[in-house]
Length: 216
Image (cartoon, rainbow, N blue to C red; front, side, top):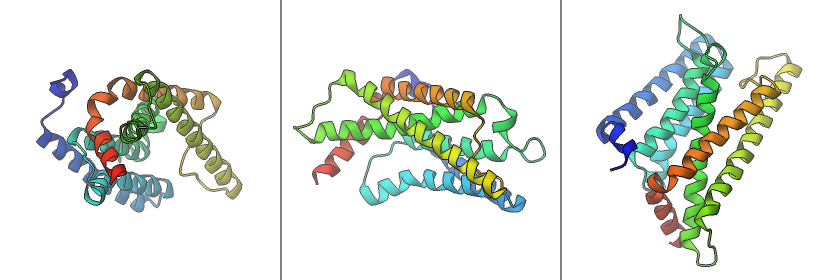
């Protein structure tokens, strides 16, 4: 058993935490509806879609999704939604009131994106005899993948911000400037590095399942 596995709660508790965060996200969505905030509604609704992806992949594609992996994905989506809403009566947004919240969510979200990239790359490597990816290059591919996704996300934030200014409305995503963008990309990279180090330990079952699906 790995050190991380010993630190984490039991699988039963992990499932309970996952379910609790899903229910809390629904509550955050209703807060957005009550406030009439398009930004909260869109972001929490998107987070709810993300947390349903593991169940969808298991049900429709028979992919192995461990409780740890499901909790990982759910936590990333939940913390983003919580950051947008904040705590009613205390603060409206963790993103604007807690300086490190954006860094936390970017690192966690980037690690989920990197995990998806890692599982896919390893699956293709396992499936095809014509494709051979040396282990030492997997980390490089992951970082390129994460950085590319991060740049696209920052461009999306910028485009939404410009559109909101032109329409004189409040954007659903906030872009705080070049310095913030560089910090976001830095923490995205950190998320990718984490997966590059531990991906083989926690994503091997998922990679094997995807490989088998490619062969069926």
